[in-house]
Image (tube, rainbow, N blue to C red; front, side):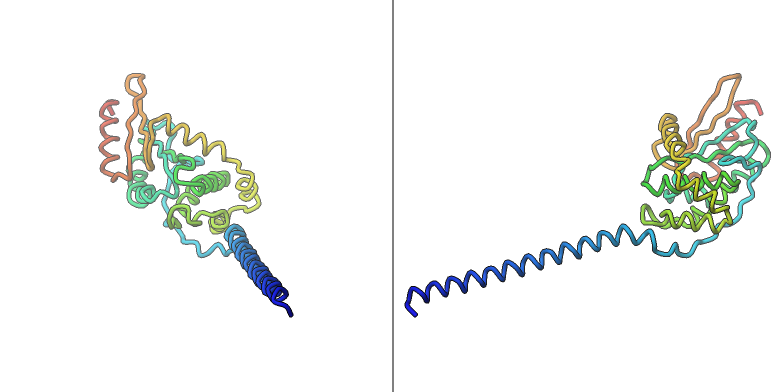
Length: 249
């Protein structure tokens, strides 16, 4: 073999080596892309099929004259509108520490009419979906039971605690008619109401959850007071007693 032929043979060997190396690189890249695609698909698909997990029960609260998302006498002299987010930890604090005392002291005796309203997707998508589930349960007279069990299972913000499968599991725990609930929930019957809740809250000056709008009438003039945060029962008591005094009651 001549020197020229030897040089050509070496060049061919180098080209073949480079070709094989490039082929291996392409195969590795394709493999990495395929693995990435599988992982992404898994992240999207798994939440749809993973078990709903254990559902914590909620303590029973006696609420008088329940009407969908409201309790008490609609003709009560004072009305309190709560703007809340089921993912909000401070909203849970109000529910656990203040709400029942407020109901026993002022709702049961006809002084206060108390209404729960959501605050849209304030914290995230699970805020809206959990509120929609509560309203759907309200169609079967169990808004407040769903309200309580959602808060009892709060576990962080947008971490899947209120994924659709979990919310369905809550409805099953409450022995709801699941055909009715699923139709309501899957059709997003209350999507517009959730959005309206937030718009009304913003118009009323709500900037965070929980916040409460207290309304009452003095000499034909409607007055309002804003209570912000998970305040103690004593803070609500002061506001209510002040309003009653202003009304001459």
